[in-house]
Length: 377
Ligand code: ATP
Ligand code: MG
Ligand code: MG
Image 1 (cartoon, rainbow, N blue to C red):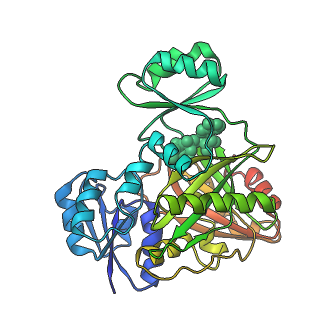
Image 2 (cartoon, helix red, strand yellow):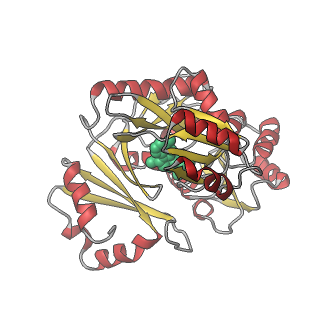
């Protein structure tokens, strides 16, 4: 079998490698942390920083195909690899999705709407944007943010200076967005093959807590059919316009009037697509691997309604107590749990340690259980 090289050794790479091993591939990981989640299940790990060109070249020599599992891989390194190895996703997609301004422009160029935004260079730009958009607005660093880090919600125009300074304004690039009064957050994971064929996963309804994804729910009829169709088309249009090979995850806001805005993109497997591991005919990891390996892409179908809930550092101890106290046997009737843990050595509050896929005919029952079982509250 061919060897797939993964830039980034986190849980996304790990789940990709676990699926890929089933498909007969070998894996090599590049990550600065020894024994990373992906390194643990790979044949080899090159332990070095993502910006280390020598290490990237070493990965390139081991691997037949190179993919990335997070978007903050050094784009310069990706460009070197692209010249010397086979990187079907390309480095341009990284450049675009690493930077919120470039990303929004790329989404607009695909004919897909985003919420009103402005580039912020000076505090005066921010004051002007706040006047134009009205409060609340969200100020974000253009690069590097994840799990809601690098963001400031400006509720009153007088907070402009505080927000600008606290995010390092003047030294780092910033962007301000109008705060979207959304009814729901959705995401669509799309896969695009080397032949340009696109498949989309059923849209997931996402709930965030403190800026971190808490639950993703997918079920027939959960999202109105017209919204489902528009959301999938937006993701497919973006995938085609950006010439994606592999996965692109598209986060969206749905307003009460039916308007859909794209929030952000991720050129890789996405946390909100983890439900597909247990609830679909093919998972996001399988479609990503098939795409980057030039294999045909099946249409992923939902086998059962599903609720995915993240296990963060603070949830690990109560989860283990729950398991010791009988765990699965105490689940409500008609709810089955599939537990996934990422093998991270160190547990920290807010850190993604695993997730549970709850398979059920009644997502509301599963969501109620999450809020009352004592693990997540
Ligand atoms: P991720 O971990 O998904 O990469 P991130 O740190 O890149 O997150 P965003 O997705 O931009 O951040 O924002 C995190 C969450 O904050 C969103 O899912 C949404 O709940 C809220 N949020 C961000 N921007 C806006 C906005 N313009 N209007 C309303 N809510 C927003
Ligand atoms: Mg993000
Ligand atoms: Mg996000």
